[in-house]
Amino acid sequence: MPKVTTVRTMKPSALRKPPVLLEIASNMAMGVAMGLAFALVLTHITALAIATLIDQSPDPDTTMMAIVCAFGSVGGLLGSCVRVRGEE
Image 1: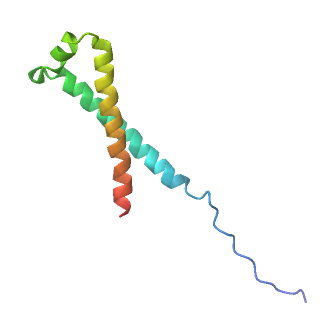
Image 2: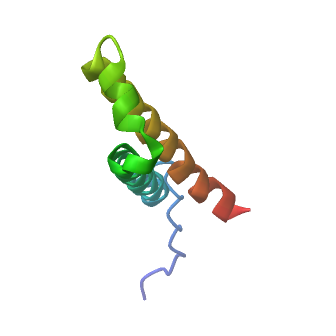
Image 3: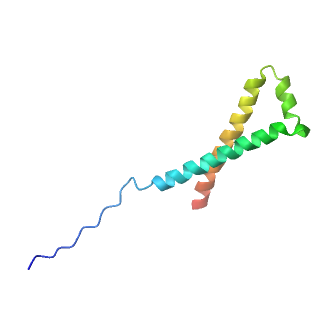
């Protein structure tokens, strides 16, 4: 009769966190998209006169890119914070 031994359980891998990283990346991408959409809406509402301020600036292209990048990065930060706060 063959000898019966117990099977060793597999140790959890340290690389078993990709779903968490993927979720953080997707929340960050969603935040960037929301930030860019907010910047687009903000610059097209005439009552706020943001477009007028951009047009009157010395370099309108740079000013517009600064606004869009600022809202995109803040949106990405807030989107990734949603994931961190959701774990608590």
